[in-house]
Image (cartoon, rainbow, N blue to C red; front, side, top):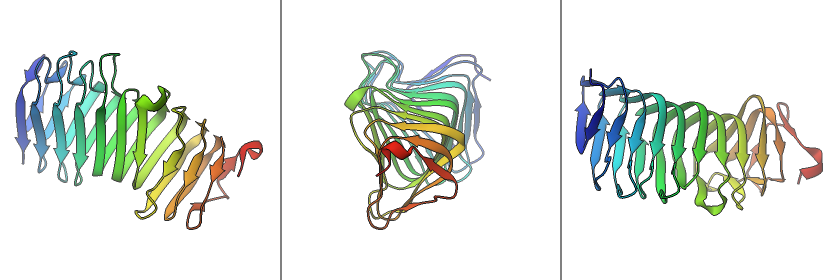
Length: 239
């Protein structure tokens, strides 16, 4: 077990295990660093930081393959102060954290949280502050989803499942579920409240389900579906 670790590159694969009791830095001061957990490898740590200082850019952490896991017992920052950093969770890999922020500090921008047939679990806040969360496929679960930094807070929900207890999306953009081709599900958990300042659009082959209250305009083009038995819409904003 390591107490505090800075990696320029790391490969954990097959039965490999890495345990860090404190913060795990990926590209703390440098740029272009790559770390990969694959084929059932596992990394556990306290906090995780990709691109720690303002000059740390273009660093990437990838979790890929069934059984692969990155377990952050504390927070996870995709771009703590540096720009253009990426977390990719793909092909059955899993990342989990107590809380997760994309683009934590003011100097951090254009960071990317990308899910492609992976699993992401966030116990508390999942905040897209300075960058993009892109869901192509797989499952994202979180206590709450927050995107309130204007157009700097971008959510691209192409497909897969997003399941959260509460949502606050105030980024000057409609919250669009699905790309009109891939299957996409927005699941409301725990009877929470979901505020979409510019409304929510349920596209073709997309579905809104679960238990909760939506505040904001709701648009359902042809091919979109709402489970009306369990989803409550604020009637004054319903379209």
